[in-house]
Length: 215
Image 1: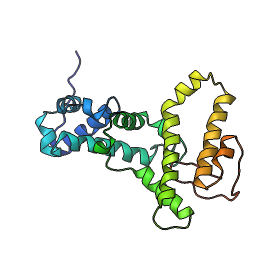
Image 2 (image 1 turned 45 degrees about the vertical axis):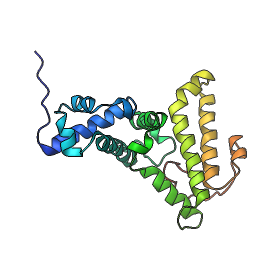
Image 3 (image 1 turned 180 degrees about the vertical axis):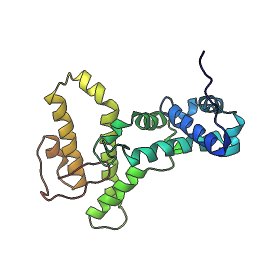
């Protein structure tokens, strides 16, 4: 006979259970396909507690995605990877899938309240280019970097399978992408980088969040 799983008790346990449930479900389907009763069932609590502790299903979904974003930004607890490394989001498919599902459904603006890595990247790239608030050029370049990283991590398997990449070929594709990201960061020629040509500064500098070591 299997023992029954203990239901969350008390405000803290219930809030954590609901937030964790939201995070899990966001990694499985779009926000619009997650009902309040789905969340309550996943958390093992009564439906009414969603409104009692969060006010609305929407607020709970926002909390769930914020939890995913925060835990990704903190990196691996055992130090095996850092969110500041290039393509590090591949280590957190739950967060990657949550972003993809919400974006494809046109609902990312409804559930995403914090963007820790993007914000850190904006500040770091702006600092490298003379300081001050990130201007339009910095924002465009950081946006391109995010597209490269999220896109490759999301479709890496498709790219590898459809192009029949093996061993060194797969490594070469990723290395080209790393060079392109580095070129974007340093205002270098991204076209040359895409051809595998490494230009630019030879000095070692602190890596931009999500970009890895750029030199």
